[in-house]
Image (cartoon, rainbow, N blue to C red; front, side, top):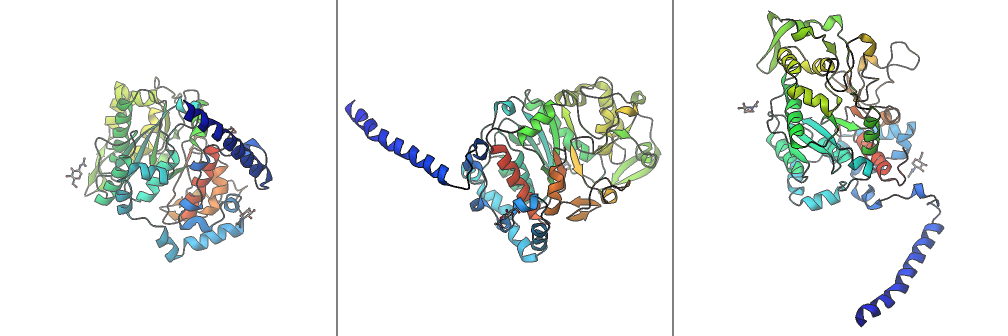
Length: 431
Ligand SMILES: *[C@@H]1O[C@H](CO)[C@@H](O)[C@H](O)[C@H]1NC(C)=O
Ligand SMILES: *[C@@H]1O[C@H](CO)[C@@H](O)[C@H](O)[C@H]1NC(C)=O
């Protein structure tokens, strides 16, 4: 035993010396205030310049404060062709980088353990529907990844083979991320968009009995909250669901009164009137993105009334904008509300998704405006956020926002992911 005792005697003073030196350096470093909330737990998981892409030239703290100069600088770079090119990452990179999963996960700083007991005890299930832009997908997954959650990924059947290979390769590095058992070809405004989510919902429901809430995403969404904040927001719903569900506007009634069909990859009316909905269920209007409890998903898979409604909705136009909103008002569905219009919920009041539509943008105080002007670009009348939108976005209660695109404004995602990671790692977890 003597060598061990000898080693201990030798090591003890060295340890004490190290501790003293560390404390001394912390106390004398004027940048670190002697306040426990300024010390990051798990600081090796915080992002730094070494793991940053070309975006590191921007000043995120100034951007997040809405500093005009920093925002303009980012905007200018974002429209520079050469800079945009440098931000791009080819699909092949992900295919080769994931050959060594351990190296991939550690170099990208994926969280591989739950950050708190509270999060561990409240697992979530995600459905992510993607068809392109692998870098967006990977950064989204990394921003929401936690080992206690479950992720189902649906890659459109018509995606480029390299997109499917890259996303499958990324997913295969995680035991709790899986590819949907059946991928469909998604047609704009067609039933297949709902079917993609339904396939993931069934896979998630059957894969695990523990998760509490379901959230669906697309590849261009990004979180505005940390996993802990999401968990707390969901717990405060007390079993309720949070999604847009309101009166169907008159000008959209044709969508559910006429029968439609996919012809050559496009949805068309076929000149046939539809039967009224089963059980005379009132049809409501909403959007494709929902935050619902496990019981809502069970109803989709097991409740005969809901199954009849699903069959009925298959030939409507843009069924994703009515099906979830309608189910949310069916009596007996866990977390649902009565059909009476006093329970209507707008997309702004729901926490599921923040989307800025061009025609709702305007200035504060205007009766017509719902939100400030988009600082990025519009794609099909939806704002693709720029760095200048971040300050406002982070002040909203929504869990996720749509749309982000690294090819249009890489700084928006860059500053957001860094802000969220720091917040998640900050000791004390200020609520
Ligand atoms: C970034 O912006 C912050 C806040 O405006 C400022 O305090 C800081 O000095 C800036 N950093 C750099 C490197 O310019
Ligand atoms: C997927 O695409 C292939 C070929 O493009 C097609 O044959 C197949 O039917 C599609 N599957 C589904 C489920 O859409």
